[in-house]
Amino acid sequence: MPVIAPVPAARPARIPSQRDGAEDGVAAGTSVDHLTETYRAHYRSLLGLAALLLDDTASCEDVVQEAFIRVHSARKRVRDPEKTLAYLRQTVVNLSRSALRRRILGLKLLSKPMPDMASAEEGAYDQLERDSLIKAMKGLQRRQREVLVLRYFADMTEAQVAETLGISLGSVKAYGSRGIAALRIAMEAPA
Image 1 (cartoon, rainbow, N blue to C red):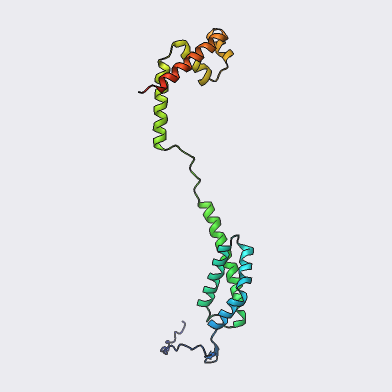
Image 2: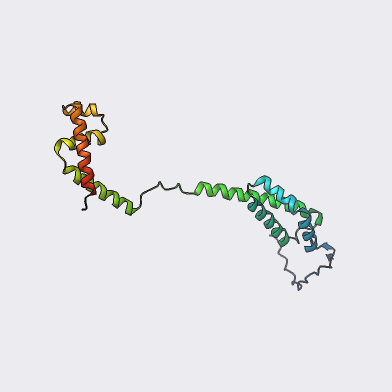
C-alpha cells in the first residue's frame, strides 16, 4: 500500500520583481523586456512564417499577435530566454494549423445555398397573370385557342399545327395572328 505523505504548509507566495533574475536558484523565465525585444526584432519574420501557412494578411496578423499573447501568459514556463523565439515559431505554426482546420470545418458545415426562389408576392403575381391568361384564352374562338395552344404551349411549328388540325398553313397564321391580338386586348383590359 502506498504511503501518502502530508502536504507541507504552503509558504506565502512572493512575487518576484523584474530585477530578480532568479528565485532560490531557479530561473524566473522570460522577462517582459525580453519578450518586447523579441517582438520588435522578430515580428515581421513571424508574420512571414504565418503568411506561408495562411492566405490573408489579417489572419496572419491575428495568429502572430495571439502567439505573443500566449507566450506572454506562459513566460514563466519558458525558462531559457533563448528559446522564446522557438516557442513563438511553434505557437505561430500551431495557431495557423488551427485556423486552417476551422476554415475547412466551416466550409464543410456551410449549408448549401437555397435556390433562387420567387418571393411570395412574385408567386402571387405570377398566379394572377396565369389566371388572367387562362381566362383570356377561354374567351378566344375555338380555332384561335387551338392554334395558340399547339403553337406556343406544345411548341409545334406552324406546319405541324396545320397538319394536326387539318387546316392550311395560311389559316394557322391567320388564326394565330388574330388570337394573339385578341389576347393582348383581353390582358390589357382592366379586370
